[in-house]
Image (cartoon, rainbow, N blue to C red):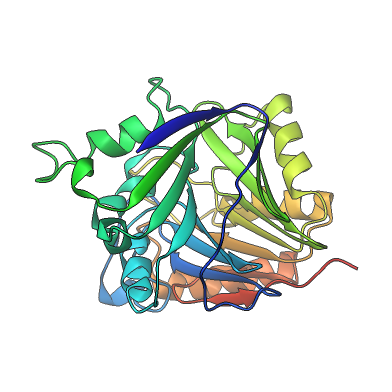
Length: 299
């Protein structure tokens, strides 16, 4: 395991072994729930696993967040032949973004290699420290060191760029309070932004970073903003997704996907939200586990 600091551009030279065509950019959702996993009959259509999105870009495998959906993704990768090289990008170190990592089966396979990226948490902990801490007794029976794959840790700062051959991942701090990063993935004339800690009270600096990352993207993956976990009312449901929709309009986003659904939002309610969002932004939809989206290039 190693640890490096990324404060500018970072180039990773790699040989990728993958079954994905080198000319594709595919986004797949493995976990779409916020705060806490919510497995029950009323969430089966949209899904109850916490955040995890996979992007297969030009033959490379990128993962954004490692909630409980990461376990499901990892199981699917066990069927791949040969070693797996992938890049894991964490938006922050809160439990719903990292809790699937101890159950990520490919990390226990010695020939695999994972490049892991994240910003410092609000307490100053690096992404490596945060992942290590959750696997210590009494929280978890086995330490991170039992993972046999090569784990290469990289500390991001706002404005960092990760360059993987012709794929560029830009990052910025979009939520100072949560110490949350947003990402923009660009390849040729394709682009996707992953921004899952939007909130209504963002200041001018945060808004500037957000708009820079989402300007003109083919696909914006964003969260509905919601209050802390308390007794929940749906009387003002439109306010929950309005921040993302307004930003998408302002930045000329082509397609919008709302993810990180509140744990109290059941399937029937989300169906009604889907209708309301489509009325406000015609190329918008709610994320569901298993959703696969080919990315449409910019004109």
